[in-house]
Length: 243
Image 1 (cartoon, rainbow, N blue to C red):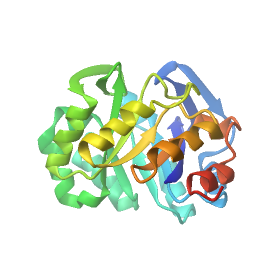
Image 2 (cartoon, rainbow, N blue to C red; image 1 turned 45 degrees about the horizontal axis):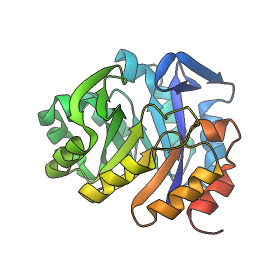
Image 3 (cartoon, rainbow, N blue to C red; image 1 turned 180 degrees about the vertical axis):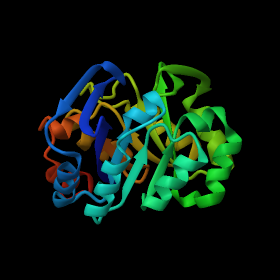
C-alpha cells in the first residue's frame, strides 16, 4: 500500500478546501513545484494533483504549473479536476501525466469515457466522489443518481481498472476516513481502489494498513501532510509495513 501526497491547485497556488467548499479554502505559501519536489524527496512514489479551477469553472491557468511539476520530478504524477473533453485529456497525456482522473464524464458521457479508454486505457482512473452515498459531479456541486458502487460496476464493465474513492464529507476535514464504504467498493468490484478523504494522522494510516492490506492500493492525504499531522516519510514507511 502506498501513501500518495495530494497537491490541490487554484490560481497557480497550493490550496486545500474543506468538504469541497470554495468558501472554506485555505492557501499555502509553498510553491506547487517546491512542494512536489519536497514530496519526492520524502519518498513519494506517486503525486496526486487536482486542478480545482478547471473542476469548478471549466477553465484553468494551472496547466503551466502542472507542466513544471512533471518536468522537475521523476516520480509519476496523476492529475484530475474538470477533464471533460478529449482535448483536455490528450493535452495531459502529451504532457507526460502517468494517469488522468475522470469524474463527471464517467457519469454523464459514457461515449467520451470510451474514447479516452481507446486512446490510453492504462492511463485512465475514475474518481468516484460521494456525498451522502450518492456520486457528486461538476466540482462536487451537483448530485447524480448513481450510488458509488453502481458507478464502480459500470466503469469496470467499460474497462476501467483503477478508481479513486473520496467521501466528500470527510475530505479536508481531518475527521478520519470512511473505511467501510471504501472497502466495500473493493470487495464488491475487485477494482484497484485508492482511498481519499479524511486522513487525520498516523493512526488512520495504521488502520488502513490493518484493514486494507491486499485490498486498497493506496491512500491519498493532503491537508494532514500540509498541516504537519503526518510526516510524509514516516507515513510512507508505515503504509509499506516497515514498522
